[in-house]
Length: 346
Image (tube, rainbow, N blue to C red):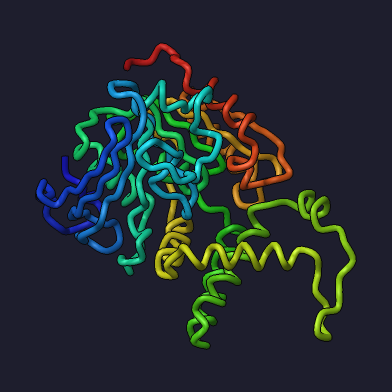
């Protein structure tokens, strides 16, 4: 299967990646590896990119690909071989719908997440990278693609471009396009980074962008509950109660994120656009009432465009766009329903 979209690229089909470039480490139940492949990018032609993945769970069990926001990575949850905490937290542990004892969980680092790729990156490119990864691992078809935030956008692209490789999709806090308000918000964050670079203060610029982002991820209700304290005067300046929290969030993000990776993946969200009717698999859309980045109206429009393939679930949470990381029990219950057999072919 060619990884190049002929409608958007003039390059010839990409040859198979050399097997010698694959590196793996494993404890039997968990496998982590990486490979260099040539991938046809929608806006930049053929590029050499790095695929890094982790696969854990019961051998032979149905494979579920789990993808999170632009800060997510290949490590979902602790295992014997890789005991460090994963980004998915309680969503991928014993007794949950995504219990590694009952299914195989696959996750990968997004193309561009290492900061080495300084070109526009489309969600379609990420979807094509997933196909390359499935081919590399010998996986014909995913039981499900569970995508949160940016991962939901990638999942939607995957369901449009490669429906034969997927049984069902769960798209949480992600829609068919970037809302103009959210796109404007991200554009200002990228300007903060650019201003920091002009001032030779790259880390400060990225930290400020992350702090702006935190305001868009959460809700007024949460801030009212957590930070309803009088401001203080510190060194002659007024400091409000939320600033310590925002500073800490920015510092943590700068410590682990290449600036170029953040810029290109932020742009990728705004490049995202699909036609809902083109989604080729049963899809559960999970929307959060009060999400400032993916308004409920956009999720409704997505489901309406999906037609009989679409199903909408709505929850309200003070955590807004970040509800998928905080509302573990409620999200798990939604996943349990969404991933039950519906009579479609295996």
